[in-house]
Image (tube, rainbow, N blue to C red):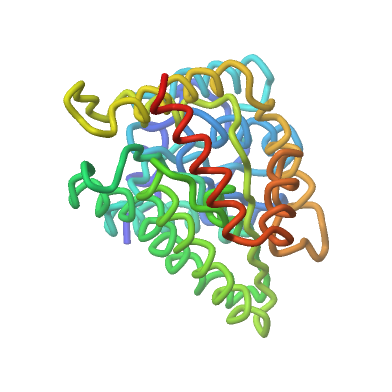
Length: 311
């Protein structure tokens, strides 16, 4: 166990050294304490800001704290630096998870809400995606969420309350072509969340899935940029189309604030629903999947793929 002086130095090293803080080490916070993974960009960054503005004490974690400056600057501009605390957390490393949870508990004495947001997307066709890329996808999107959840369950169980929000995707319920690793990881996250929700019922811990569609974040562009596009590949026309769609989604998809508002609604609800799809297109697609025969869905996808191939 680290002494208070060492812990305080570590915290200051990962936040703004000049930031005033009303937090006393080893003291209970009267505000709800939220720990969020993957906060350097995208949903994680925006959710961190929104929750801090709503009065929550937010532990905004990220794998690489050298990327904290945009979040720090926005927190300073909005006057919420005293409620936003940045510490390193790599969800693929158990020691990093343990240290982040221990540090949070020593700072605040509790963790009320965990938001498993860290994740990325791997795109491409199954034949051409190395198995190592599949494993890496699961290490972050699935096993990272499981490991971080395991680390908070004991303190939540002992306080007989807690909320765990797992950031899934429409891909958690619908298997899109060219997104096999990402889709599989989100399906796994959904199955895990179902089991966990039922397991935690006797202990007052709630588990919620958020299922967004495409939004204006950089997850898809990063995914496609990282994929290898060989002109000789038999899948090249489809991969080109995927690249174009990623760029289109980055410009024309829904406002990420919809997801942020969903999170705010969930954390304030006494009994939030288990599944929370976000976006009109997502809700209509899920409804269509329920009522349409699978053969009909296959025909629609096949028709679209044929169009792409002829271009």
